[in-house]
Image (cartoon, rainbow, N blue to C red):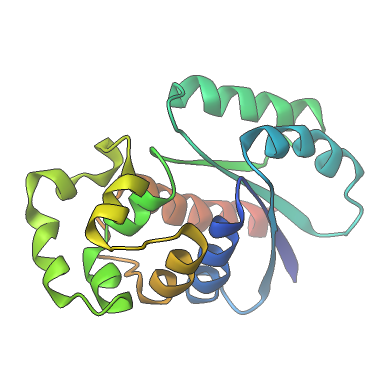
Length: 188
């Protein structure tokens, strides 16, 4: 048995993953989600946690929002942080542009969570077919769901997210990355 340690930019990501991961990971893989208070806090924490983590059979996953960064450069910088701290195998995933893009990729889930069944019909509109292209996903969610708040929204939407029907490419990169990472871990 081994453990995946998820290092996350924000508490809402922890809420999302704590709902999602039991549906994705096999029963013999445990996980721990560590939320940080923003990207700077996360990036300061990475070297400390990676270098000093002493729980055997632990493997790391870093998830951070792209925001306005260059995705390739951001991923390279995070990869270097991991390599410099003796964990080059760490899986790095970027939510493009932000975590809320993953919610906008499944408007059926958002509609179910907030009792707004007509939201699902918006998924095929040009705006929501590719939610990763929206630089303001959180603002879009606030327009769709009056009174939307990050933590409560993550708590309500996460249990309803489809693993297959989500239109966010970065969401699917997370899922496929985890699948490949688990194969890599088993092979060691």
